Length: 321
Image 1: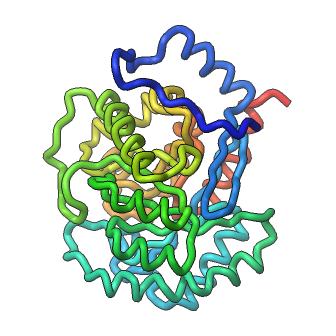
Image 2: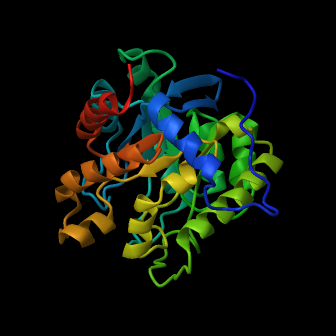
């Protein structure tokens, strides 16, 4: 694979919708599989076509999905379990994203995550996967927390705050960690369900162009960036469904890995009439299929086994051997 960083379209005078030539490239990528390179804290991950799976480990007792593990030993044991099931990346968070819960302090968030990070090397050592997988992703929006945790370990910063400033990008540049840029609007831990978009896909494209440049100006390499459309974050049902339906507009426009956090989302509950997140796994599988068909490179999920089996079953049907 080429070592050259992917080329980013110019924000001036560009047509944001796929051209006829884009459609040809898209059709070819469906057949052959796109290639991705991710540089994260010294690890270099190359993959083609078949998406990776990011497994969720919630270190908060009030996780929206009810699967929080606040005891570090239990959390590390669970991480070992999902890695054995096929998780390529383990994503940990010390604070629930639920907007009906008050924010915790930076000190408490660090206290919850630090023991897991310190013990993650054992998970890697016991993994039967190929080096350098599995990677460790740190899910936070606070720069001070990100710096404290990444100075201890971790490969990826999963910034759920929408990269409102360049501070988190600077932390990644300092530590060499990769950065997930997630679309959102407004402050974290605050409900933004009232937000309206005249064109959500055009909004996402403009947002990512701006934030990619912010990250690069802060010192993050192009090959250390991932994009997340932010399903359920400052979006209504129709916005989320439009993103799923038109995801190819992002995956074919940006030459960067697209992370799709599909698991047990509120939009699934709204479509299926399921109030309990733990009952949304079948809907999650449907979202994995939709994302796989439209160019997603990584799926963030709770039920790792179901996602891995779904991908491993469907992907061979879509490629020519």
